[in-house]
Length: 506
Image (cartoon, rainbow, N blue to C red; front, side, top):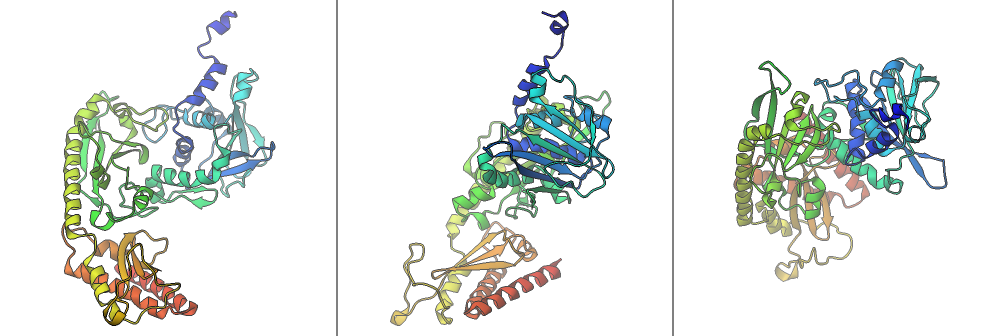
């Protein structure tokens, strides 16, 4: 055996195949590494797209990630494709640290990655990494960047500078489920990058905008809004592990309660879809980017069903990576005993408090009954109102037989009021099914957010009257919308009224 080979520190062929199994949880985690790079390069827009390659009878997709960041010079581009190559190695100022993200995440999903970058329009440089070229011994270094005229498989972002990364021969990607994969990516990337997205950054997937997903249910985006902060945030000043001085860094811990009174009667499917069910625990943010979530810092407290109704967020800066046990893939934490001794006492105590509060509130809701007083009042007097024109036969509604009034008259409609985020900006939307009128109040409308504040007890008389006002408006629409024209007019009025109300409250 060649003595030079015996002394080689790394066997490239073995290393590049082994590093493909570096532990990324899935496509979203791998993409997150590249999106980190884009935002570090001051990009405002990051686009992800799946492009079918006509290379065989079987459909194959390339993944294209583009941004309008500062771009890279040829020398920097070559470094970026090295394992451990970085102009900011071990930096604690931003999301990146080890220079492993681009090659590591790319090859975890594909056998070939090509990078195109430009610092001024139409001066594009390209280099690549190819697993098969390294394994076969064709190359042992990152190819020198070459000047090219265009970027294939994509329309280059209309910017003076930027970068496009293309994953080819994606052998870890199930191309048969691309359509199902995209909605999942929207949710996961929306959650991971909720802070940058809320601050104005943009991520698109096949042209569709990724909306922020807030697991604390406090910020507008994709999902319900209604989380109420529990107490002031906890602030811990912790000494930096790598500092010989008494320099400290801050860990922030926030707790939020979910509105049981408003959301307890959502269906199990809705609770799963909105992330209420099985969403208990802590979300961990590093440099405003989620890197993990789970049942952390809870000490001896076990997870229970009532814990679905509160949330905790722990945020820190990269300078505390050692204490949090952050791995080079930036997708999990392994807290040290030192950190646990600092955070567990408070977090476990508050977790037990919130669990008890949720338990008491559920008992109180059950005692008050599932029906809202406004729904009962509206049903009591609905028989005095002109019946709406209903389509189809008047039959049993959700298993409840139609009630009859005196002399065989129909006693009236059934009413249901619920709270949820609507796709429109309307104050409310309504739906008539059989003889049940369901009115959905928009959780994101300023009036709903200001008027409906959980008070730990029965609804106030004012809130009850507000609910009756909304139910009355929805009922009146049924009388106006007797034909297509009437329905359009009623919807237009509702939208205009909602927008004006929101303007007044702003």
